[in-house]
Image (cartoon, rainbow, N blue to C red; front, top):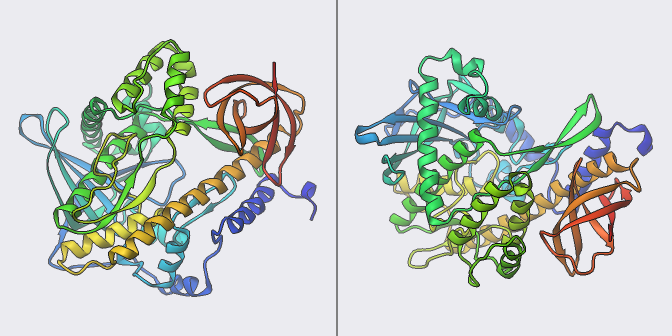
Length: 490
């Protein structure tokens, strides 16, 4: 079958599989992992003395419209003086995916689900991640509960962790919940159908905003990142449209940041080694300072998260239409996060972008292997058992997860570029407004907005840097390799 004979979707799927293999990621599960999956016929059940019964609470999930690998639920309970007890339930993946099993071996190898525009390559078999280990609506599941008491000012005053049985009462979607919270649409049907759930979500939204205000005061960065989502008509690619942040996404983000902080501090309080998620002080701070100067603003010579966020807030107010472009430039200059070993007596760097010192990944075990690791460490601590991983092993896992996360991001970006090249292949010579998103010895890249696409500047790139706005002309595309070549116009 020639490239011309394939549907757009099939062509992109083949590109995605090839990119996975080129980046040391396995697109398929081993025979042993598939055999193990076949042998699993029901969700985990545990009636031990330490398992609480929280099935009657008004748990709900909020995720993308098409998400089925549901990792977390949340519920809130009002306390005196405006305080709220927030409960976050995390799917107990370890209850089925045992350490050293074939499925675990695959997860440990890839370390993450890979979400390309053509196909999702799940870290765990679909039978588990979208069913037996997913917190699906109406399904009884085991979970790790992260309990957080938040006062009226957004301060975390107490926390606890334990295991429980839960039931998701409503599978909700970001866009519908966000529009309702913002007052631009009626409540989604599923939300409106469950008595008391509206008050629940408004309470959680209030807590999330309070938590965000506290982090913002410490310097947490308010950035708008835009990811492109494909629009297919049957199997014909029609567009790549921006998938922007909204109030419901921010709600979940704020609750998960708080939950991950509790997890990190809990293990530290027990004197146990664990994994941390860190974002170091940016090496290209000088370029961020230059960007601010070019916009008539000023930042200190030394990296300062609070000063940077105050600058970002000013720019959002002054030029909201262009703020996503500025956000993208800052995100690129901040660099990538990484996983690191946190061992007793030693302090790892914090997370510069979130303005938190104690942070990990523990709230998405269906999608990320570090979260499975943290879950196993938590359960061992709760049961007062020895940790299932030695420090040297955790250090090696941290490095491997960082590398594979980078590989996964490159696969996702490559397939996204192939999709964009497919859309742009008939538009050679067309001119676009663009923003520079990358500039190094390896090359200079820009992003255009219609469609949302990134390509390399192969002519006229001299003297431009991240954050600069330029006018470019499309020179060439290569769908198979994901190449989009631009010339800078003067």
